[in-house]
Image 1 (cartoon, rainbow, N blue to C red):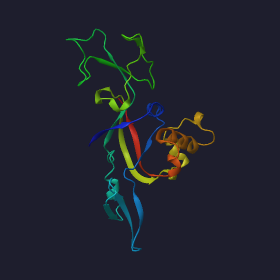
Image 2: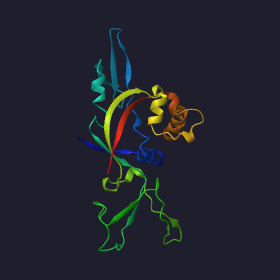
Image 3: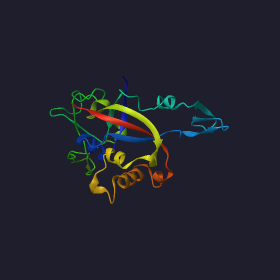
Image 4: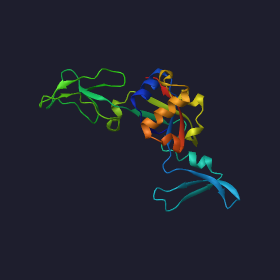
Length: 210
C-alpha cells in the first residue's frame, strides 16, 4: 500500500466530509491516444511529455491504468486543502517555537469548514496566515482516503450519477448534476476545459474514518 497527496478545493473538501463525494476526475498528462494502428488492431498510446515519442500498448488498457499517478486500488490518498497553522496555547517564537517538520506545537484550522483567525500584523494589516493547499504538510491533513477503483475515460462520458458522486451540491445546479459538474470543472480547470473533453483518470474513493 502506497500513500500520496491529492489537492482538493473547499467545496470538494466539504463534500468529502459529508460523504457525498466518492469520485474525483483528474486530467491525464500527457493525454492518451486510442485508435487503430495501421488498421490492424486497437491500441492505447501514451505520448511522452516532449511529444518526441511514446509507448504503445496494444490492447493495453490495464497497463495504462497501472501508470495512474494517484495510485492503485487499495492505495491511500491524504487530502491537501487550504489551511491555517496556529501556535498552540502557550507556544511562541524562540526556543519554544513549534516544529514545522513534525507539527508538534501547532493547532490547525481549515477555512473550508472553520472560522479563520485574523490579527493585525506589524504593518497594521489585517492578516490570517492561511496557507494554500499545495504547501500543506502531511501532519496538517485531516482527510484520509482509500482508492476503490481507477478507470480511464473521456471527461464528457461522465454520467448524471457520476456527477452526483463527484459531490456536486444540488443547490448550485441550474438543471442537473451533470451541468453543475461541468460548470465547476471549468471554474477549476479553465474556461473551455470541459468542452475540450480530455482523457481523465476517474478515481473512486472511500473516506477512512478517523
